[in-house]
Image (cartoon, rainbow, N blue to C red; front, top):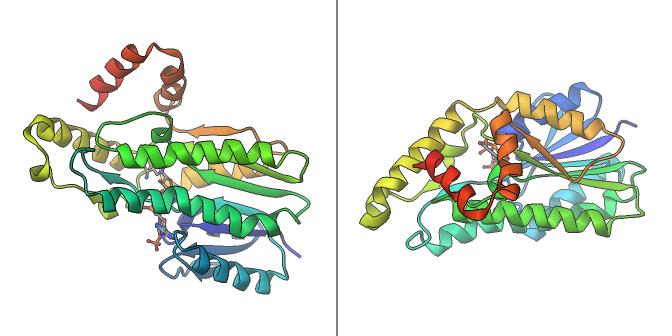
Length: 266
Ligand SMILES: NC(=O)c1ccc[n+]([C@@H]2O[C@H](COP(=O)([O-])OP(=O)(O)OC[C@H]3O[C@@H](n4cnc5c(N)ncnc54)[C@H](OP(=O)(O)O)[C@@H]3O)[C@@H](O)[C@H]2O)c1
């Protein structure tokens, strides 16, 4: 019986690259997203991860096919979003939190009972470098990804003494459709105080993503993490400057770090 993996976010970007990659390495792979996926060697499961009941139904389907086995969960599903704290519709911010944080929470609850039965269970939660810091006009996204980091850190400690290992993966910019498909508050809706800096920050973000790492590269790095015998708590995937940024954020005095970020985002 091959090892069984669940890859979320398999209809686009990193998940779409990762699911067939695992299949070529002999895994039985299930790809979950709201849209159906048609990828070589991947069984499609459809669910909104913000909907715990829908996720439970997808898990029942998976376990029916895999004979009750689940050895790895690679949680790539997530959404971004941009706007000003003062005026971004709360409903938009809530949707980001529902998908990124509550989706991760639901996924842990839906998969851990099966994952813990595996002799080598692995759970990789995808956060972001943006989860390590507050980026202007990305507050809801940064907060949701910071929450994923905290969730992962807590869960690791809770699972001590079990055969299940958890790690949080924080990538930098990846050239996927994520910017094109996410909500970005129209600049005209922002107060004049913010408008010009919002435009600059949003352009910088879109440019960084466009020239970011390939989804295939990130998928390859995640497979390397999955293969490790002993998972560390955090893995940052990105250009050296992005890797250093998570360290600098912790080490620099607060105002010095703000100055660095404001130079970067305008
Ligand atoms: N792109 C970047 O620059 C970047 C940087 C750092 C971190 N990340 C993180 O890395 C992960 C992968 O990013 P990506 O750029 O590959 O994303 P992407 O191309 O935008 O794809 C997102 C995936 O998540 C799925 N998804 C979104 N909402 C969902 C929901 N409610 N229920 C189920 N599935 C849902 C989408 O499928 P459906 O729409 O079919 O549901 C899609 O398969 C995300 O967690 C993202 O936040 C991305």
